[in-house]
Length: 288
Ligand code: PAF
Image (cartoon, rainbow, N blue to C red):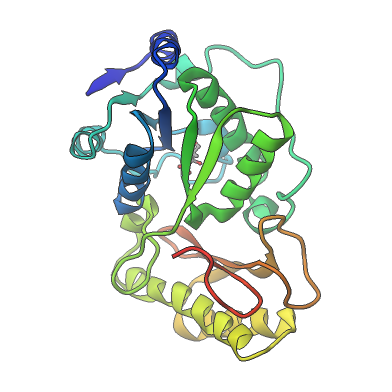
């Protein structure tokens, strides 16, 4: 396994691999790998000749009051995980390598970001898309793998590659969960014991909402309110949002129709957690 830390080396390597006719899969991450990332790596390993893991804690996607400083890190363990998953190349550049000087262009996003996390995390998705534009240009992947816990990210990134004809296939991968249902996330380690215990109710709340759809409820407001009530009853967390939207367009809907996402964000002292389920109008899950 090769570790590459500079943009120029990575780009040259990818260009020559591409010339040799090798297909390239990229799993972009911010490190502190967990089983969710491992699932992305396994899919990437199966579907490509060359598997690249990028590890870069991207400051551009964190707001001034967000948890950049508290974001967990463990480079050594991440490298071990990469070896175990048969990664070919780990691309782990420094911040200076990725952002050597102030940029003279910025990406502004006009759709899919004025709701859910985009509402409170100003500039977050612009930061995500900016770093991905760089990572795609540097690693030149055929396929890039993204976890559906961040379904809004998947939706925004897919729109970005479609808008700009970026020749990368975006592969969404189902959320990996702990035994009690909590979605795996690097941030979970920042929860205290009580918060960790309560955190399992996020997924249960989503399933509770989905049950309403299965039973024929068509009014999004009733479903959203049932999910909110469930979270309030079972946790001390502060609800950031609960919403039911069309998927992947993320438009508000006045009645249950087509494919939809039921999504929540809840702030605990230790971490702000997000989760979602994506299902059709009969309540059948689309990704498992
Ligand atoms: O999902 C993440 O970990 C990040 O948003 C990503 C895609 C690696 C971009 O920094």
